[in-house]
Length: 209
Image (cartoon, rainbow, N blue to C red; front, side, top):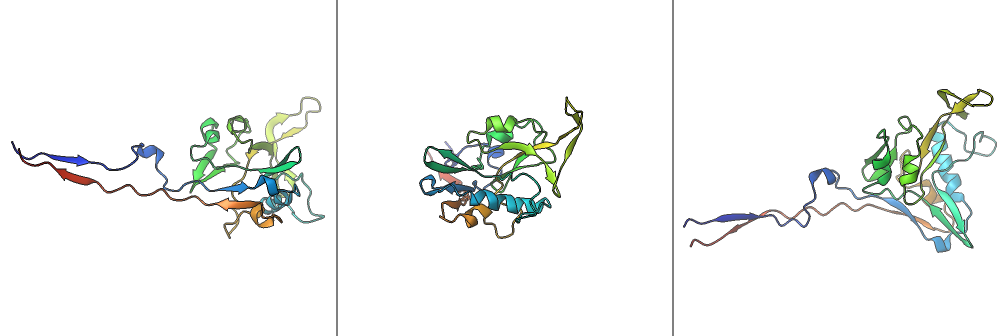
């Protein structure tokens, strides 16, 4: 009998290529809730950074819109905990979005505000309560939704969109504003670690019988 050659794949994972298109694991901000004092400096820093990108003033006397950050400090008894997006690798919010307004870029889950229709499907799907739907502002003014009016006075209704932590994608230094602003160093950025490359294929030769 002639020699038989068998090829063994020593890869530890057999996941389909569709689930491994990105070799970058998620990054997200983690918090030590026991050290948080509830000062909300993270909320203000978050609003200031994202407000500038939308043409909204961020200093005293220039804020003309509601302060709506992308991180929220919640209180449970005597404990304060910042709530932020975990940038899930298999993000349920992205699966729930009917218009594909949520995507993942280099391990960061992003919301396309222009495509979002404000349906709140992502809010219901998020297991951490990290997403809120709020009015959209540009240059200090609310954007209205064409064709939608208030039932009582027929005034135009504001356009709404989902909002959550994007790890300050608009900044250049790569460090989220909330992490830099926290006076107690409660917050830190947990960087995603690239997946280990699969082991090379190994050829095994069986002896001739």
